[in-house]
Length: 326
Image 1: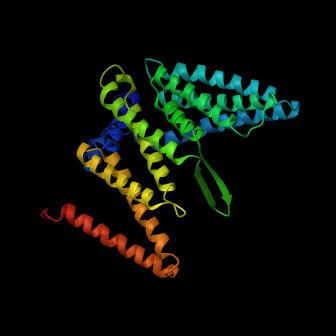
Image 2: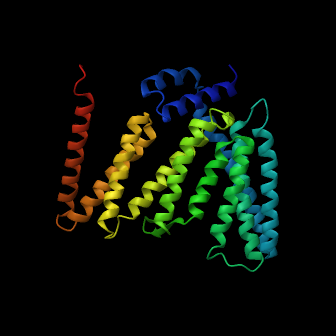
């Protein structure tokens, strides 16, 4: 069997398991038949090599631009690198023999990152400031370009980048706060929740209608829309319940978590169920923290939280498997 065929079958089997189509036991039976020995190490070495070459190339370009003290020159150099990566990556990605499918997708995605950097440098070279709406606008424009490239070449990696750029350009950001602390923020949680809900609906429609019809070669795109939509929907609603927000948002967040579990059970979709369970647990822990952190010592707080988690886990497991015979 050709290595490319083995890679294709391995990816498909893994995707089936992630989508809830097959259980873990069947995955453990199918995966060893197609997975080659040393595949993880060889893939790791390949990706490390690509990353090293890319970073060394950017270092050389940055050195040239710094010596010239010109943001315009840096933008032109980085733009040229982006075009070169796109040309070479597109050829590998669209090769009928599919000899290097992962490499092609990686190079196309790297070309989009280079284009984003070139746009930012060009904006600075023209006298703009990297503040305000300039960077989010560039992120959205690059996201549109990434989405077009994903559908043109039927690649999921550019669509993944497009969704990241879209949601972060819409007003989500994170930062390192020092001392091992990170901060996340969404500028308008209500707008983000609506956009995420639209992404969930688009993902379901894309997966159940388009990918079974005119967009058969775009299999997996709907799953990306769905996962990103569920993630940012739950994050937005969670942020709306923090720091003394109205009780109505707590009830909405809780209802949405329960609703996802119900929808997942009805559609037999583990993605809805997984997100619902995780964020419902986060919701319960957040409410427990808000009401009891100041009333209990740290040791007692974590002891009670751990005991409650174990009791709930035992109850759910007994409810699910209690009627089965050993």
